[in-house]
Image 1 (cartoon, one colour):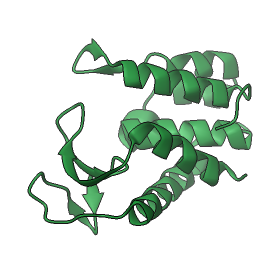
Image 2 (cartoon, rainbow, N blue to C red):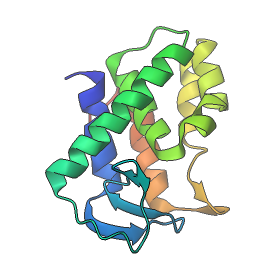
Image 3 (cartoon, rainbow, N blue to C red):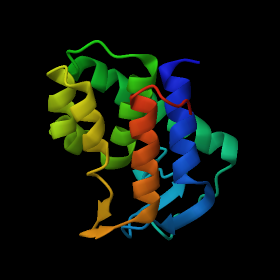
Image 4 (cartoon, one colour):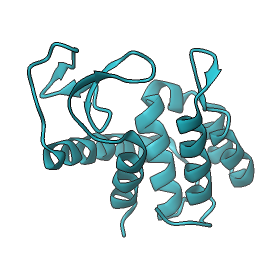
Length: 151
């Protein structure tokens, strides 16, 4: 399975599917599998769209491909497909700006894979409080990154 396919599976596993707009744990309007943009427009809670699971998965795949391509331009260390998948899932969730400026990425680029893996676990907060779902997601991303478990 390719890094992109693994990333999409990981993202959809933890984002969960909702066919209509909803406020995520941070209060951000979201639809499908955690998409904040749909058809080029920011999702609002009053957005009229209802999306199918297939449409939402395609949206994730498209966004994940963009994330992966951007990461491939920023990462200087050789990575396995599992490492790319975990890093793509993480970045899809926290955003490119946060990921590209993170200690996690600096550790990856320094070739400190074990230290980079531990950085996943630091990203489990929302508005200063621990979110159990993020803790679970980061543990899974870390495990995938270390190659100990597949998606």
